[in-house]
View 1: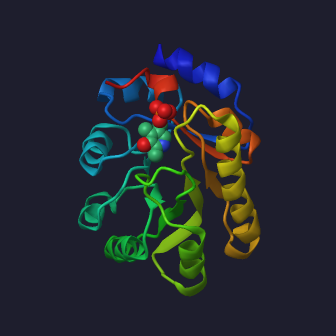
View 2: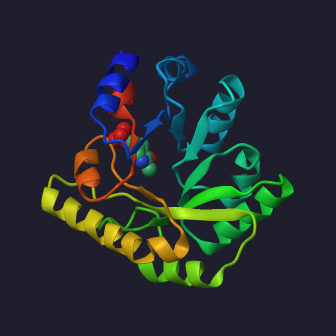
Length: 212
Ligand SMILES: *Cc1c(COP(=O)(O)O)cnc(C)c1O
């Protein structure tokens, strides 16, 4: 089932769009099935789950941290994480830089921007992001672009507007900052996101089935 979902998904995806298979809450066997179907990018939102799965699965998997990350837990994923999508503060970025240094690595990161109207969503605003990209020169992190989550709503126009704002900001800074990644779009809105310029989508339930 997972392999079929994945293949159907990938065959319809434009070449420039990377699929992150969001495997949070799913058992290792489910990830293994996706891996055997050729999937190498997996997204998790909890540090402990990511560590357990990374330990158990092949080493050529690229692990994406997509959930809110506490500073005191960065050290556990710093040795192996591929891309952290959820950098929502300068303090967190500095901690990632420190832990990356201890592991002699440069860790790829995205700045998570709050574009949704719900106050519960994590992320920084555009001004905070500008302060970071213009002032912080950290040696062991590489900011590759931006991540955003649209509002949980049936209103497609609102979702489109939110994605458009993030895409505009991305375009304004992409060449000066050397960015190449705009992570937006989930199971319910990935097509809108791709139409709005996303080149990395994070899809869980459409591949692995609904979560409990
Ligand atoms: C869970 C999650 C996803 C995937 O959600 P689906 O609706 O299952 O595709 C994408 N991004 C983030 C940040 C998530 O937490």
